[in-house]
Structures are given as structure tokens and as C-alpha cells.
Image 1 (cartoon, rainbow, N blue to C red):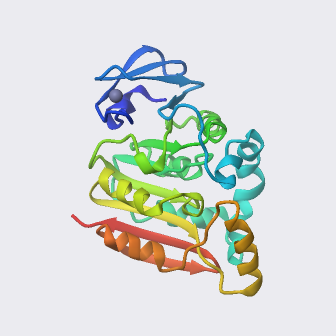
Image 2 (image 1 turned 135 degrees about the horizontal axis):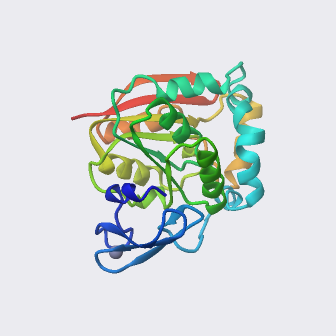
Length: 264
Ligand SMILES: [Zn+2]
């Protein structure tokens, strides 16, 4: 946790400003103007409290084995498997990090192991990067990976539907593959819009409904575990409703990549 990043964050309960109370960026306490207190443990700021995941997909993110395996065994191959073509991680990260002018503050929402957060901090060394997720084991793994790469990213435990971030304070938002596990995507987009500065950038990767029979059967099974696959135009329509202009959209199999920019 980079203590300087507290200036971008707010209390999830009363929305007042947060300040450092005691300890250091590894272990300590943060307090809001109304004296709500939050712990920093293992370098991660917990603004959520006890875990309350709702779906099986969300619960699985709370298992340490998922956090361990996610970037080691799944993420490098995910887009090639899901798109049905060779789609190396470098191609995905080039897309996500490209076409952005001098960002100051970047937030990776539902960041898992912080893949996009690290790519952004590497691409934009002077930017302040914050990763947010609900799953504690994912955040611990993200923190370990950032520290190993010597990247000063802050990781914060919070809910994407109630982001603990001040209004109009963020230049770039990334969402990587997490739309499919989110409850209430419309509330999340509303929050992303609230925290965005005018002309902020959004970079998104998500999975859409399959038009193939086998894919539909698999996606139907996944739905019972809380993973859902919207129609390809669903997110685009949702973003448009919140004043986001989609500047680029790519569909590779069920993989959907989107670049959008907030209207001024
Ligand atoms: Zn408070």
C-alpha cells in the first residue's frame, strides 16, 4: 500500500477522506474523518471487512489455490483458448495499455492478480496505479507480484459496486475478464463513471455469449455458478448509456476487447 494513494481513496461507509493513522505501508491502520478504521495487512488495505462472496465463481476467488493458479496456469493461455486463435498475453496487454495520453491515476477494477495493473505501471512509470478486488488471496498474490517486479502499485480490498474512490479522480480504468463474474454490471458501470475524470479512458476485456451450440451448453453450466455471458452489444449499450464513447471494439470468438473514453 502506497500511503500517498490514500488521497484518491474514500471511506466506503461515510465517503469522507482517509488518512494514515499508524504503522507503515505493510502493516498499519487507516482512519476516515468520522473515525472508521481500516487495516493494512501484508501491504494490502482492507476497506471491505469480512468476505461475503455471493456466487460460486466469487467464492472460488477466495480460495488460495485459485489465486495461486490463476496467472500461472490459466491467464497466459486464456485468450488463445477462448478466442480459438493464437492470442498471446503480449498482444492483449499491448491493446489494453495502448492509445492513452499521460495518465496520472489508473485503477484496475476487479484486478485478480493485478495483471493489467502491472502492465499499466510498466507502461506508464510516472502514473499512480491502484488495484481493487474483493478476494483477499488474489490481492495478496497481486501484492507479491508487484513487489517482486518493484512496481509501487497499491492494492485495496473493496467492492466494484461501491468503489472507495473520490468522484472524478481517475484517468484510466481497466477491467480484465471480470464482467462475467460481477453481480449488477450496471451498478459497476455507474461507479466507473462516477470516479472518472472527463475524457477518462476505459480498457475492458470480457467474454460474451457464444453463438455455437457447445459453447452455449458450457456457458449454461457456468451460469449456475454465477458466471454469465452477455450478448456482445450488452456492455457497449451500457457504456453508451453512461456517456462512454466506444473508440475501438474487437470480437475474437467469445473474447470482447473494448476501448472507450468518457465524454467531457
Ligand atoms: Zn467513514
